[in-house]
Image (cartoon, rainbow, N blue to C red):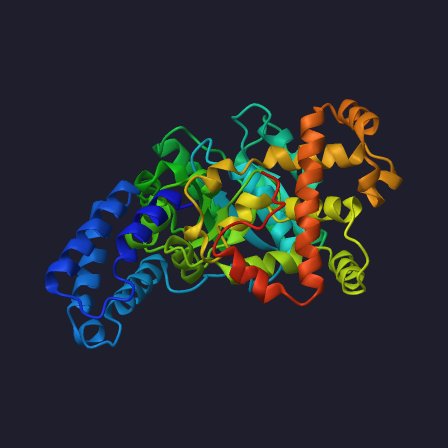
Length: 452
């Protein structure tokens, strides 16, 4: 996410770092470049104008001009204004209501409402420890109800059945009554979408809103529509009094115009980002962390939270003890690391959150292929337990058997063994207490043994 904008801003602001003196002329040139970067990211023009005006006002003031390192001070101003633009801090869901707390999901067709309903249900169960019921009032789209039923089963939410012959308001009232009977904490109501905002659609959503009196009315919108996402959100808010926005498909949006425009145009906070197809791929939106990502500073806090949630701590401790005792890092351990990485959203997902990724050689990100991780795991799975423990015995005939068993080529098996040996060397350095020395030696490059 934000790849294009981040790359452009990194180039623009790089020249400022370490500057002992800034003039009005080079501030003007820098802000012109920042303005172009934001417009290319499809940020709404009024938002860009306001942003640049605020940065300029602070840039020519004492805050920057009298700083000992004015270049760094100006970058800090840009970061602070980005945070301000997106809403200062995370705006959490308001679930302080007599159960069940009702969440109404609204949005256009194809924005990902049903999938997001499932993701939100899972997030509430895992992060908030809430029991969740979901219901579909979409009686128009074929198989919409069945889709939500499937999603509910995957995330472990209670599904309230409905029929396409029923009225949406009747479905919603019956679901609310059932949620009360079952003492469910949260009821999420998935509504019908249209290809565009029309009076019929808005009337129906307003009737549902009146019948349910939800504590949260969330607008689900595709981030790849750019500033149009903000304009559509404003049209909904004028009719429905939204409490927040969920941006979907953010992982596929290299521009970021929606995330930077919505708060300013609608006055409504972005509460979550959909960052992948998996039902676990939903992140609370933190403006300060997103601003850091945009400026290439990484997002270590989100990475730590992900590790806490998704990494098997017992497995990690077991590997740490093994390496500390000087016992070899084998292919069983390598496979375990691949599986942990997949849980974290793969290499590409982690790269965005690591600081200093702007120092990677150009094209490295493009080379990341998550399919390679699947291939590597398949090759290791085709080995015997003895081969995984003692990779040095894997020679010609064994390589042929492993390649055939995994549907790969002997060259792929050779490549895996080479990557494994590199990873083994890295682990040996770590066991000797040389982590800091190893990280300094990398100088922004990727560690050896990474699967691409």
